[in-house]
Amino acid sequence: MADIEIPDTTKDVLQALADDAGVPLGDYLTRLAAEKDRERALEVGAEAFRRVIGGPATVAAFDEAFGGPAPAQRAPRAA
Image 1: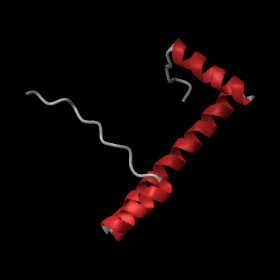
Image 2: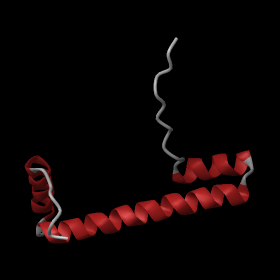
Image 3: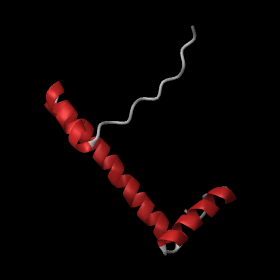
């Protein structure tokens, strides 16, 4: 995957984050990818859980304990 082009400003930010973490950039990106993969799995699992349990009170209790889904971004509507 060495053929991926990353803007210099983005690479500089990633390098600074890796430096702050005290790891080489490649290791930092590996950690970042694993973290994002876990986040995605948790989102998928939480959504499946919501579909299974479905009751509003149970969903509200789950969201209170573990955090609800991010609010949907909506485009402004014309008047």
